[in-house]
Image (cartoon, rainbow, N blue to C red):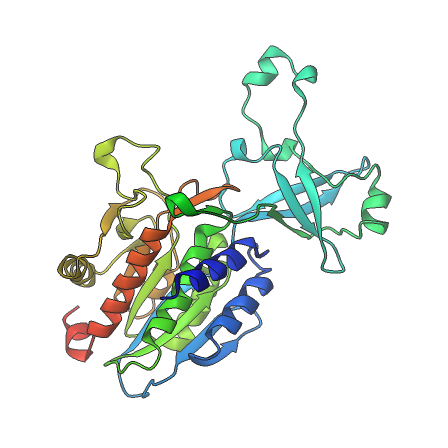
Amino acid sequence: MDKQKSLRLIEALSNANGVSGFENEVTSIFSKAVQDFGKVSEDHMRNVIVERGGNSGNKPVVQVDAHSDEVGFMVQAIKPNGTLRFVTIGGWSAITIPAQKVRVRNRDGEYIPAVITSTPPHFMTVEDRKKLPQVADMSIDVGATSAEEVMNDFKIDIGAPVVPDVAFDYLKDKDLLMGKAFDNRIGTACLVDTLQELNGQALDVDVVASLSAQEEVGDRGAQITVRRIKPDLSIVLEGPPADDTVVENYMIQTGMRRGPMLRDYDRSIIVNPGFQAYCLNLAKQKGIKAQRAVRTGGGNDGAAINLYQGTPTVVIGIPVRYAHTPYCYVAFEDYVSALNLVTEILKSLDADRINKF
């Protein structure tokens, strides 16, 4: 792996605008990055499939998936005073939304800087300051003073996508990544590097990569990609929420600098126990840090893939502190561990092993 090249890729993906349904910038970056590693195709939903160069067509098929979209917002209405009412796309906690800088796409495709409104404390009562904010009471302000100015000058329409306005930063001394949309641009970058690491290598399986759209609104893209690929086995690369700053020590299952998380269970999937055990044992044998998690919430593309003929599926997640907020952290060492693990898994698989799962 070329670390500097990987960092540049992660930066480009993190900075890209790509709320669910509007992933074009992300798919363009991804498709260009993988064009030398196989046959690349994209559908009208913005799903991208890469059939790895060297696939034979007569070996078991392993789908390696990541999703391209990020959580964000959409303009629902334009108020007479020129502010924009909006809805959330994907899961948000309302308390993290006010006073954040965002970008609103206009009809020319330009992203306009804006801010999510908040009431100055000067105009709040003591009781107001104790209340949790509600999304329905918030607006987006692009600096206009009328609805006509929004529509005619700013060229913003109802249905416009909105993303957090955050620039990627690499904290070299700590080898930390900071930025937006690491759920799941960090998995997207790892998918690219996986294809890079395996390029030219002989495998006993055929690998097909999928960059699936609209995961944050119900795993919609993965429901399409799995039917096109028809995998015998699948690995889902994710950017799950880290828990090491929010739970008791004994409950930490997705801690930063502890390696990738392999999820046993969430509300959408129970992973194949045999495949899960195999991956964890392989990590131990290769000296790769890894951790496992049992979740009461959450979901991922693995659910849609697993439901296709019961395809054995595992989820390999790179811990993301403060996922589904504008500002996130990822430790680069966790990224490397995830990359090493997924490539070792793919190099070790053959028909006999897969049949045992």
